[in-house]
Length: 83
Length: 83
DNA sequence: ACACGTTATGATCTAAAGGTCATATTGAGT
DNA sequence: ACTCAATATGACCTTTAGATCATAACGTGT
Image (cartoon, rainbow over all chains, first blue to last red; front, top):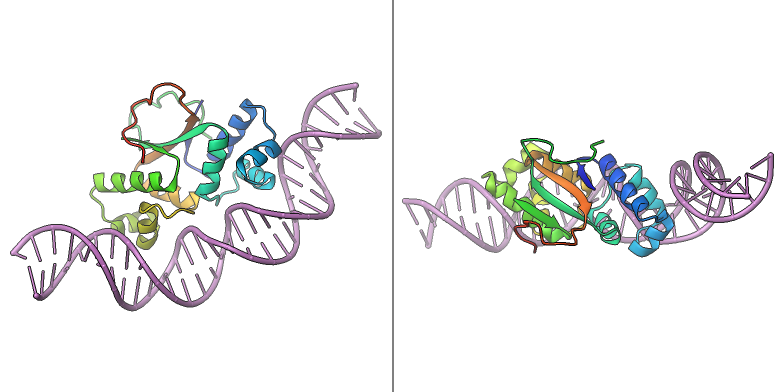
């Protein structure tokens, strides 16, 4: 699982997939991350403007990690999907 | 260059290093990204609460990319630094 | 020490994120 | 079609990010 994230929509997909992969409902994710279910819904649907801290909370709860690297000039290096 | 980002402080470091690596001043980055110099200063110093859109703007201007992956259980996979 | 460029801080204002609650809509399962 | 869980939406309110301007602090060369 590897998601390139350039937009809020990308992010939403990544979060939703990770959540589904762990068989969690939004409500469950909400209580384990401290982010409201309603907010998770919005984020998963790409309605931008999310704060980083919120992302970090979600990412931590979902056992994901965020990396920042130089843009890979070469081949599209094993990415699963870019929305 | 590969930065694991878990906190705003991590992010600040990643941004600053990328900017320095491209020999840009905050002001230059500001005008090419549309994000104010003052805001960049705050972000680089890890004063959290940044919005994702702002990050995307900076990342795009600096030719970086953000990826979200599962947390690597194994070895710490070539990361340069984690603050 | 001085001057200049760079970065940090501080104030004000406005737009908007997200906590919070209520409700509507969707989707499975039977 | 019905029910219940899961999501989405909508409204309200508080808090705060970031635009914007001014200015302070810091660095570096000379």
